[in-house]
Length: 257
Image 1 (spheres, rainbow, N blue to C red):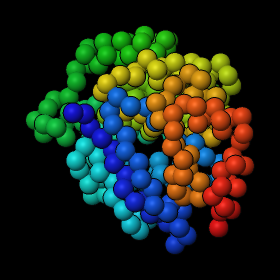
Image 2: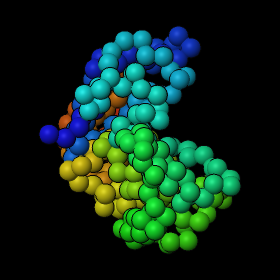
Image 3: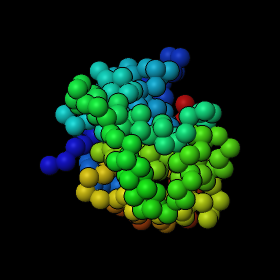
C-alpha cells in the first residue's frame, strides 16, 4: 500500500483570523485530485500549511503523511519525507544554478536517510538530469541557468516540474501552477506533470480555473468555499464549475463571513 496524505478536521488561522474551518481530505499515491474554489476560499492557505509555512497557525485537527504526524516536522523534513510543493510564485536565486540546487537537494535527502552517504556522484547526477529533462522535453542548457533568474512564467513552472521529476515525491501539491501562463506554456507544463503521473505519485492540483484540468485529468474534484471542502465529485464537477461559475456554490453555502 502506498503513502497517503490525510487531512483531518483542519482548522487554521492567520493573525487570529480563521481561514480554514474544518478541512477533511485524503490523497493517496497514484491518485490525482483537483481542489477548486473562488479566490479567498483558503486553497493556497492549505498548500502553505501542508508544507509548514510558520505564518499560519493550526488551531485544531491533524495532518498525517505516510503514517507520520506532519505537524511535528519542519518544512525540510516534510520534503525529505516525500512531500513536494510547486509554488504559485517561484522565487529566483541568483548565483545558484538549477543543477547545483537539485544536486544539493538530492544529497540532503540521501544524507538524511544515511548519515554516511557521500551523496550522488557528478556523473550519476548528470545522467539523471539529462534523463528527466528529455522526459519533460526540456533543453539541457536549462540546467546551467541560475534558478528562476530571468525565467519567463512558463520556464519557472517547468523548472518546478523538473524539480518534481528529479526529487520523485510521494505526494506533490501544485499551487495554482496555471497562474500567469499562456495556453502554450500551460500545455507544456501540464504535459510534464502527466508524464510523471503513475502509481508512485499522488497529486493535488490547486486551481481557480478548469482549463489546466483539460491536460491534467483528475479522478477527484473538490470545491473549497469559506475554508471548507463543500463539494466532492469526479471530473464532471470541474466542467460544471467552468459552465456555471461559483455563484451556485455561494448561493448554496451562504456568503463568506
